[in-house]
Image 1: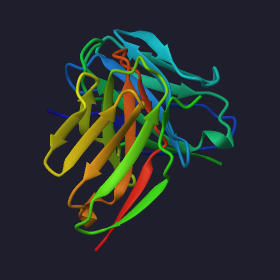
Image 2: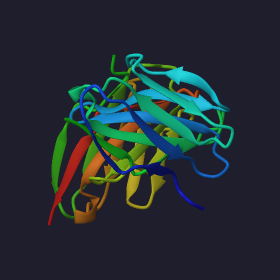
Image 3: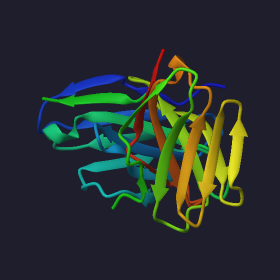
Length: 114
Length: 111
């Protein structure tokens, strides 16, 4: 069974630009969540999608947005990039709500904003 | 507000000894708890979990303990091995598919 796939693995962008990250969940997983990891901040929850609908949202500005497609693949977009957006962005997929199960993570996309 | 806290950013343990990683949470609605292990440049990998109906779960060298009254969980690794050196994150869920993660504890096992 293929794992969670995130593309690209690395990105370098300039301040003010926008970026789109992609995540393909494990087959059969319909819940996809996004996290930002920065040194000392752990994994900060961005948002979670299920059946193409955003169900949960973390405390991030509106520059961070996402969407989910009918095949459960998800994209995350960050507009007007700031230096502080440099981080490892992780995507995780899991079984639907009500099932106690772990989230499976991709290897992440390392975004550097210069 | 950080609902899951790992107050020790780092821990060093001698090979063969016990490693104890601690985690505290504030939300009494959390009913499922997990530990993840993360190596540099990789995504976190699931290690072990525990439901709120239990107070202990064991898997090989890894045991997770849950104290609901204290809102505290811990991960015990015994015996510790150099390959266990990684960052460990605890996480909690209220069955809503949102996982709340701590800030991580970097474990170094010294050969």
